[in-house]
Image (cartoon, rainbow, N blue to C red; front, side, top):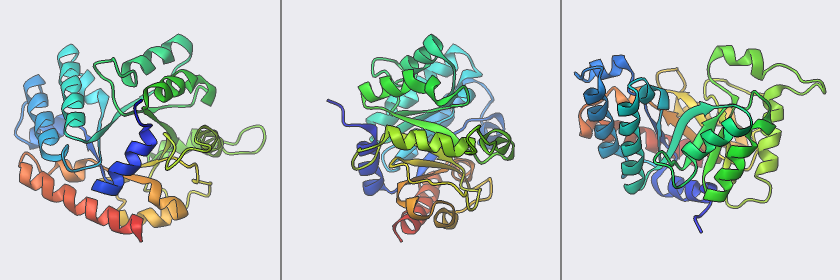
Length: 277
């Protein structure tokens, strides 16, 4: 039996610190590294990040779109990156933000959390805005394969509030309703549930209950303006379950492997300190 994602994530964060590093090979970053905006550049960039960080950070989070834009050859690079990162001990969150209904959602689930898929990851990000119940295929398959699911709840982009802060018929904000659903999925799990929420570190006081007994993936640290010091203010008592996500602020130090490692180590230490204390 594969250990549930929540338990594996808790162990990885305790051992390596809570840092998640995004792998976001967008065109400007490839150029900044002196690489072409092509499959060869994509492969060099991705291989360098995995080589530099997969044996020392808790989580790597490739953004699927930046690989998909190159078609099948880009997806092949992504498949190899997932396999290599997991082999080196990092957990992989596939940042795909998929959301659909019925058999289509089941197809996305099979792609990202079925252990037999070439893209099989430790967890996947999903959008619940066709209704939380639309996520049932991925929630069920993830549980079967020991994988995790991160549900968009309160995202760091300002446009998100238009939907996430809207009020439902019973007077509850949509984001709060999603968090309640997540808490139900995680009921009784120990040491940590496998269904997480995406909550931006840039938001300040969210005004919602973040005690969902699951991990809280926190984008927005670094280039978007948040710092590790913001974690206690945003997440309060749930800070120990936060997975701070940093992408550009670390990746800009490439292509030097040593510089990538030094930057990641600094963020990992900062995040560990604020989460612990």
